[in-house]
Image (cartoon, rainbow, N blue to C red; front, side, top):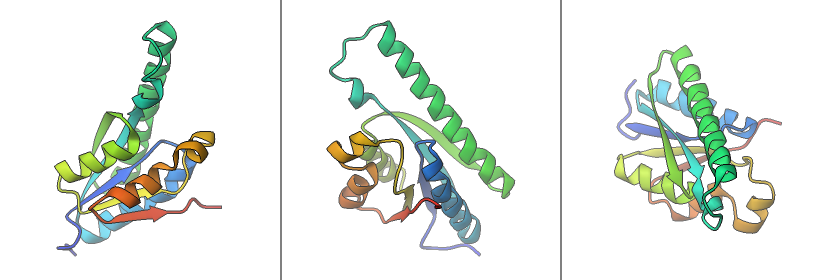
Length: 148
């Protein structure tokens, strides 16, 4: 059954356990509506903006990129298990801003993301990525709570 409402669904992931339920929802929606499935992981380079480039920064940056590759791989494997293909993208910048920019420039019809990720203290101080996306996106957003 193809849907005119959902033509492209974006799953935004940070690779955490908290986003796995959102991944399942996004895949299920794509499967049931015939929508194209996209996934994105944003390497949060804003966190390193005030730190001079050195070996420690490079090492952390590489770890975040590897984590992003793993997060995209997880979504891809889950989608393929359901007979779907997914286009994965690793992007750099501030996660909330980049998710919105990517969605708008790729004509996404729905953004799916989780309520909690890795942010911990950052979430308390800076506000969650999900909240920023919900508040600023012109595209509908489905926020999925983590399984207890």
